[in-house]
Structures are given as structure tokens and as C-alpha cells.
Length: 310
Image (cartoon, rainbow, N blue to C red; front, side, top):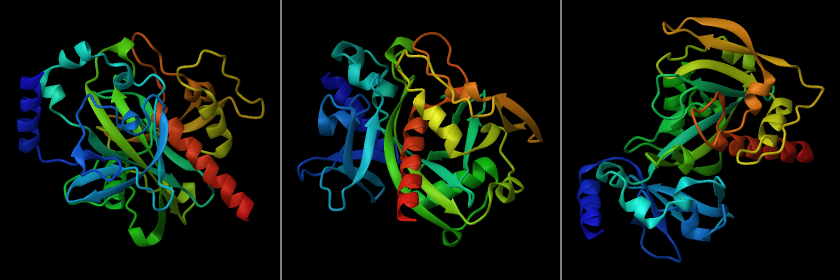
């Protein structure tokens, strides 16, 4: 194990990217190891905790000092890192062990008529292909979270928004591991994804007219409303009960398909597809990612709070 630790330290010095650092009980921030549970660092066996976060000197620092209540950090109940044994951890390839925990940002773009944009990841992507998520990606060096979110939004969808034409709010963070369950293979990637809500003054139809998705990243786009989102988040991954889709929801939803050449066409998909659960064995299926469901729950709470205040 000592040799693996030394290898990890050496590789960390070589790699220049934004990585998660952890600080607990006022201790100096330490770079998180790939096989270290980020959520578990703060709460042990529990799956959710409120933490503070900051981006300082290209370090993404999570700590338990809560000056403003913090934001929720959550992992799946079946998070592979949570159940990874010591022998399984040390048997991971050295280049995987040396990765550290990466930082991503995902943008929940809300239109003026309260629709959210989701994108289907291209089938050629190595991580979570064909899975529905908000636009997003890695935070780059010397970048702020909002700037990273706006850059990824433009790169993936063609939507160019400036900070002064939107309002932004950090909703929460998700500890993401791929593959998402140990039953589907050993961990290859480990991220903390920050979910940012961006509110636009344009309707979803106005925004839709400006969509120019990158076919290397996105194979389809859809605008979802609160009714569909409630059905999606009710399909909790890891549970076995049957999913019930409300009778007042339409059976299909309009989706913009993106061809390999970037051409757009309108089609429809079953609403039930968006309520698929993550399979614990075999190939993955088209579905909304578990982390996205968490973010969508947080979004619904913002709508409820807004309604109460209004």
C-alpha cells in the first residue's frame, strides 16, 4: 500500500487539474484520494450532508464549517466507493488510484416559463453514454464555477449566455462514480458534480431556437416541466417498487434529436423512458442519471419556495 501511496503523490504533482480537497474540523485541506468517500468523510455511513464549498487556488475545497447553512452533498445509497473493500481498492490500476476526485459542473437552465433543459449524452462517450443529464463538464484551471457552467453550456448546446442576463444559484453537489454500482464493475471515475441553477428571462421556445448541440457530446435535447420532473424523481434508483406515472401526464414528450452531422429533427419519446431506473447488472439503459434526479428534486424545492413567497 505504501508504494501505491507514493505513486499517488507523485502523480498528483504531475497532473494539473481541479481536484476535490477536504477539510474537517478546521484541519488544513487535503487532496481527496480516488478511493476516499467524499460524503462519508463528513458523515460516515449516511448518504447526505450539508457542507460549504469554495474554489481557491485551483483547489475545490469542501469543509464542515457552515457559515450560511451550506449546500447538500449527496451520494447514491449504492455508491461503489461506499462499499469498496480494502482489497478491491488496492487492486485498482495505479493510473486509476492516482486520479484523485475530479470536479464537474452541471447547469440546470430554467426558462422564463419554468422548463428545464436536459441533454442525452452521445452514445460514443465512455462515461454514462445515452444517459440524460443537464449540460456540463469539468471545471478548468483558473475558472469560476459559473464561468465553467456557461462555457460547458455553450460548448454542448450552442447556447451563449452571459452572467448579466441570468441569475445563478448553487443547488447542491453529487458524488458521482462510474460505473455507478460495484455489481457493474470496479470504479473508473470519481467526481463531485456541482449543480447550478441558471434562470433565463427567455422562454424555452426562444432558447430552443438558438440550440446548436455538439453531436460529439449530445445526441438529443428535451425541455421538461415540473409535472414530468415529479414523475422522474419518484423513480428512485436502487429501489424495486413499481413506478407509477400520473394519469394526467402525456404518454410521450417532444424531443430534439441531434444527428451525427449536427442536424436537428423533432421526434417523441415515451415519458416512461425518463422514469427508467439504473440497472444493477448488464448494460446501462437510456434513463435520467441518479445525480440528475437529486438535482431535479432540489429544483422542485426552489419552485415550491418561490410559490410560497409569491
